[in-house]
Length: 309
Length: 273
Image (cartoon, rainbow over all chains, first blue to last red; front, side, top):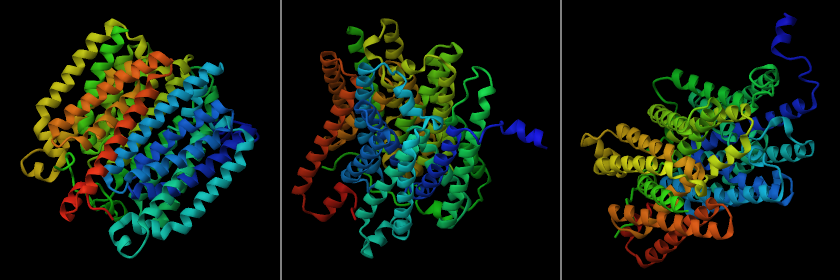
């Protein structure tokens, strides 16, 4: 039995500093993303979640250029972009989609500029790769406290807001009629989303942070009816995917073809998507209310092909 | 330099036409996910020694099929996000195997529009004509299905089939344009100009034509500015497109402030809460 265990878990896994950091940060990121992700999925804001991660690329590249810690770049630009998205009017589903797209397009343009300027001023051509795909094994230890604090902060805000947030997510009209400030809740939520996404952007890269935000939450929403249970399920799935990903990435240093190791993000994504597909295939005939409440078309906006005459 | 102008203009026309439907259908996320995910295919093709176009085409079409198939029974935006993430995860794996990742990543994401060879021009143009022709054939049913899906269904137009058709056209357009302008630029060109055009035009045909026009102006101005300053084209295109969108928003707001009738108001903005 110990032999089998040793074949799966390479000796020295837990005594390696970078791996311990990766496990710690990975867990914080997985839990935060999963909890925030449940609301993201219910509110149908996957695109905003992914965009904020991508937009954070701009902040990461800018911070890289300015010589500041990337984490702060991610955070500042993420929160600003969330504010702009809400400002352009993300209440309407289709308007939201376009507003998100335009902010994303402009931010990516700026990212292109920063990355270009970065390659001009220094010889680190790996910058774009690091910013986009990240790596859990190269997190600098002085970032860890900031990561944990902002993760906890995001969780606290979501916990405080959870009832209101759920209400405005499932039926915004009724919430507005009861006097809930729907717009303010939306802004607060997007700010939390920006924090959570910046967090995972540092850990597994801006592009792949979407995986931990959407995958576990979407899986959990398929599996359970209750919001609280969905959050716990999502956190468990996200954490399990992250741990398995770290384990396999550590093992993969002995794998072909290059013996340089396979990226953690690849494994995490594969597990997350596999979990989603299993829940998709196994889902019951009747869709759980959480998922059904906000399905596309349920609260479809009035459609204007062009601006009316 | 001539090649750059021609290629960029062709790409702008394709982006304007497909972007019109992308904005109308609210599928900006798919417009972002398909080119971006296809970039992973290019990395794979580079690793295996195939032509980059094949990798892009396989991943773009695979992504489109996956989104359309899984989107039947689940939330479209969730499925799109996961399809994108899976493709990029595989892309990260491919890139980690290859040794020249940084340059490849940068050029595929942000494009190499100033390095267009004349050999690429013909295939781009042919594929561009094919995608625009398919959209022209689908124009009326696709327009109805995008604006009023329920009514389209009662007339026998399957919205699933329209969705699949549209995503496949987007995949086709993507696999040709990504090596030239990059995944990110293609997205900015599709959404910004078309969204801006919708604020100015009154009829769908006008909106599409205006969208193409704005996309062309954006690209041309971007190339000129990029050539002068040596800053990346993606930056200029992203910023100019966002500027047009902002102008459209301001224009709509100005006009709307003149409208007083509540029904007209509600129609103009969708009902706000």
